[in-house]
Image (tube, rainbow, N blue to C red):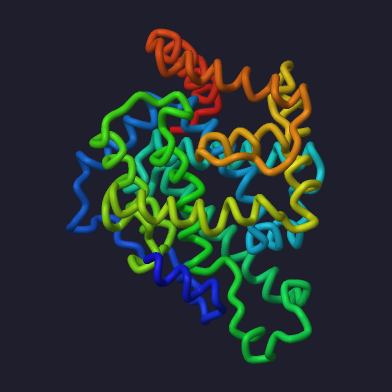
Length: 319
């Protein structure tokens, strides 16, 4: 898989994926439903920590130009109001997958999967139709331009890493106390969510289990994400700031800024953040670290917080 990633980054043709929902078998013979359900329960037990890890991955992932181009083109996350609305909608989709039955074609969870596939299809059509040549320089050949595929299998593999990568790489840094078996179950869960989203086995980073996924996620972290964060594209900061400003609309405590999130992620990976950090952002970083450490060391506190989060989202009837 890592070899495939390198080849793609060097400019090879990237296959798109089939958005036809009818191509998905909802009764795969190789599915271990007990292991899949254990992966769901791992998330449910650590819902708050997992959502925070996903938030960090989401903001940091905006530095990857492939993803940023799509968001800039669609124009639906350029203001705080639109940004927080879109990402809360994404959160609701993720929660439906973790709390519902994605294998039941009549369930909200399965309808959510189908909806996300349709959104990917619409975004790909929009991007392809716009012929956004800003991604290419003058030296790019016409042949290579024509090979460019938006919302590709490769992109889906990176998105998969964005949802579960930080959780399996740095569980303790995000307040999660767990065993390797727990993480292996969670990787297995995302192996099948990837399948339902249309990711081919070759690009499904969870296909080989925990140790394989861990190696691939660390390679993506080192060679793609941290490199992009060290020198992000021009649209990264305003797009990421729209999101962090949007969080202030739903929280009384201004916990998040772009700088504090990126710096905290660098620290979680064991790397030094290459830019200066303000006193206010250091305060935010230490507050979040203390909060997550409390969830890690005090199970009763974690259970209390997670029960509150579950209750809040259950009111929106996610199942």
